[in-house]
Image (cartoon, rainbow over all chains, first blue to last red; front, top):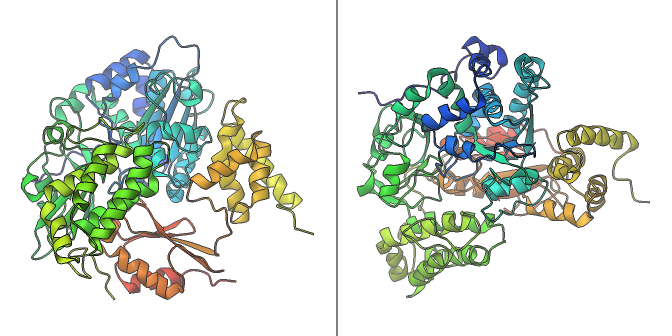
Length: 444
Length: 166
């Protein structure tokens, strides 16, 4: 049975000039916006609530509920801040939405803004997405010319402006309050919550922060109905999901999957990953971006869905699935992941600022064959001091970057402890100068 | 005499574009334009010289330290003059599983510069995840993305297309 899911967000990809207004309108684009302008704004929020849409940025928070937290009677302006700061290692879906169908995102922005009473939307695009930011800007320009954005939303008495803001290279700005700080022209130091952005967000005003994929799903929900969307998924999460498959598989890429699809099916199905490299087996998989705990080859029959992964003390996160084969050194892999968090720690909270480079140094020491007895305990102690695991999400820092740095360390060390001990016992990396698995060496 | 930061014509272009950017923000929130303003200056100068950061801070009515703080927080802002080409190579996990460590070593040899360093022509840096993991390994040259660099031949083709350094 083919596993590929009904195309929602990817339905226009591959059509000629799919990123243009003409092409988008040619497949019914903006008809849903026209329709919802005849609805009460509260009805829009209710539909999204009923659809069980959950945020696709990483946390999986119910979108309609987030929208309903915005105070109805605030005298302040409200803002929509769109998170296109796609930076979680292993995640590369929003890039293709911006490239292939920016108008689907813009229609989602317009519908959400109308529902929320927002008159200004900012799309925060990571700095490295220059091409995508330029393409999005062209789409916004088209939408202004077509009377979608501007003083009158499709002729209605509702002003809506939409602006692109480019980041400049900082993972922390994908954290929602770090992004708000950056949008305010500052370094991206996350804010203490509460208050949550829905109440006190951009410029101190109520602000909804949504991921690109989340908003791109909104037009289809309003077009086909909340029930249709909710029924596509299990109990508490509606719709299908874009997952990003990378690492040691034969066909990496972005795939639209049912939320019931398992990690094993994603790797092995001819529709998706097309299996492991010749002669290789799965050794480890990170299921939800590098911040998620690692899984062993025995855990692959879990669905790529928020609740299912939560039950095994893991997380669906941003949909970034990274596969490591049995010729990959996991000490080196974890060292690289830890180096990322040390580099990207913003420096605000001591456990994260000091702990992430400390873990990186210990891992380097192990990988370079200088490991000693006690190093593994040190790693676990430092990780535990940043954020205990399990359970997840109870860390000692203002934002989740600390947890994100600690979770991989806990899980790699606990689940693959023998490999860490081997490095100490042998006084070298058992994988020698080929630590990166089947595809990990460059060819001529 | 030191040359001015921008010519009169360049300053006019800068001011016009900055006025447009400022129209995107509440009038009492000028400093929100810090990132766009620094991007704009860097696109004109190739980097952010100290007097440039001061100029941006002055236009946005904040202290020069605020501009400096932002410029040093984000890796894409250059507070030192980089080489003509800035090469950012992703070596994060998904890229390394497709040969990024070899790619970086090959570039060090090919460009004659160590990762993290600059010469007049090249600035070579290790980058964090560029969100291109399905087409790993990848790199950017002056913010232009290149992917699927799985062989030396593919890398050579990218660099052969660059305009020769002046």
